[in-house]
Image 1 (tube, rainbow, N blue to C red):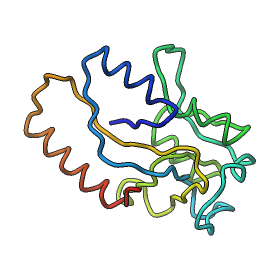
Image 2 (image 1 turned 90 degrees about the vertical axis):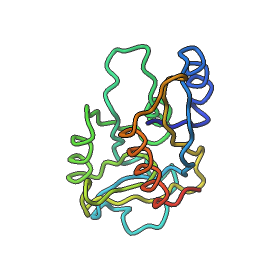
Image 3 (image 1 turned 60 degrees about the vertical axis):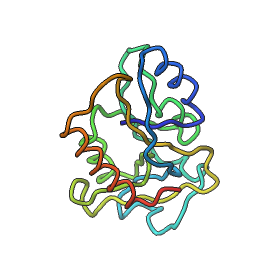
Length: 163
């Protein structure tokens, strides 16, 4: 699972072609911030990018892998002068729960996994959209378990109200 945006689409499309990978879109979303319920912006129905500058932005540690390309590279300098690096989703959620830091994503939240204390708020005047999709090798045959997973994922994403 990954997403395409204006910032990474050319790079990833070229990479998919080189590696024989097929990208299947599942939905298009306007980016949203993930914050804790008690965050100073939590009562807002939307926020502008410039309003996020004073809050730390959480991003995944990209290590020294020059082949890696991540959405955080595109967003980091636009949204905040402060960054917090984490290595996994659990770490990110812990930081969000205990600070005024934020992360950016689709806005899809599964309360059973994330809890009720983290919310998402749309970014107004957003500079991009996120086309969420799945990838697989061009000639790969998807077994029944993978097809069931895709069906569950499609249903979950539909509940998140794509653009």
